[in-house]
Image (cartoon, rainbow, N blue to C red; front, side):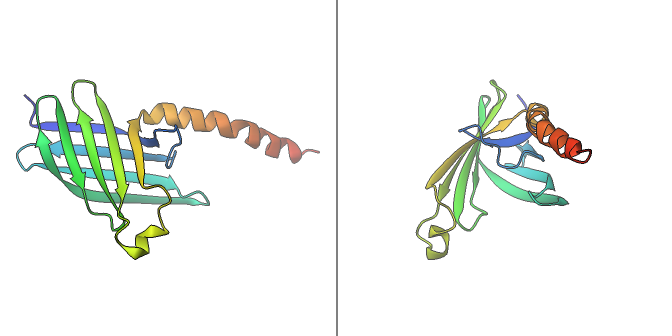
Length: 144
């Protein structure tokens, strides 16, 4: 019976789209305090290299031998339920838009988003393979 569970990976949407491929999320959960910390480090914001770490403290709703369920209500326009399946070693998240707030209606197009914590090494390898042909073309263009 564990009093601590930790997971690491990169958040990916269920449609296989990676929210930010050059990022890593670590979730550490502690049974005694019934809290988790979620730390996400990002190196690239889409335009430039910009190291950043976001840290959130989350309350655990339930903890059993099979799973941990966390409710995240820290975001203004959405709430999330994160479920860590201890036996299957998997992490899933369901984020639901808060459409009651007028300022949130235009920000989030989808009423809900399902995500899972993917293997960060596999995501990074896939991203490198996608970018390699573009980098080679750019390099070859220098010599034309």
